[in-house]
Length: 206
Image (cartoon, rainbow, N blue to C red; front, side):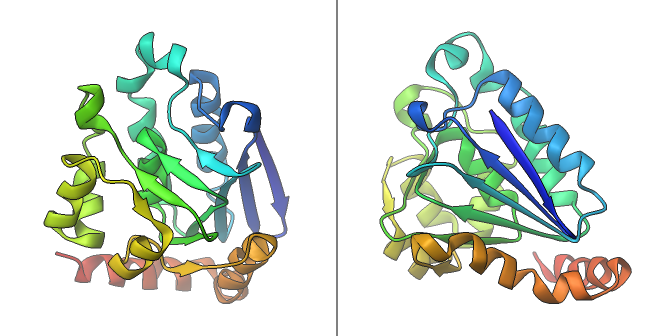
């Protein structure tokens, strides 16, 4: 289940399947894609999870049925990357597997203490989604990207912060308030102003 809440200019999408570690089914991925695409007018989009895990990636049964290689993952990360406003991944806990793609596609990443990041594609014998490795390498460098994707390392929140994989560690009870605070200036500006600055930053990237 995906909960969508619009609080003025901020749209918050919450992965709400905590009894299954917020693992994603095809229907949930479709809902996330539609939620981000429908929020084009929002000044900021926040993606988070319910409970103590952001997302364990694809639901096991759905993955076996083909979800692991579905184009929906790329559709979701592409929608987040193209959003004209500020996109924030508010990690309420561990993120694993294909769910890391949407996190990498966001502009900012904040996380609670104890969050772990891993992407066991080598162990599972599958390929990551095409845009995930270059986005990961752009954030943390090629060697550290190989530590996650090829060596199968599980990265702690402290390591992720030091590497630049996440931007800030915040207390669990302050997670969403912190995300909203980060979106304050964007929400106060015109959409054109925010979109232009985001484009200028994108032009500076290799």
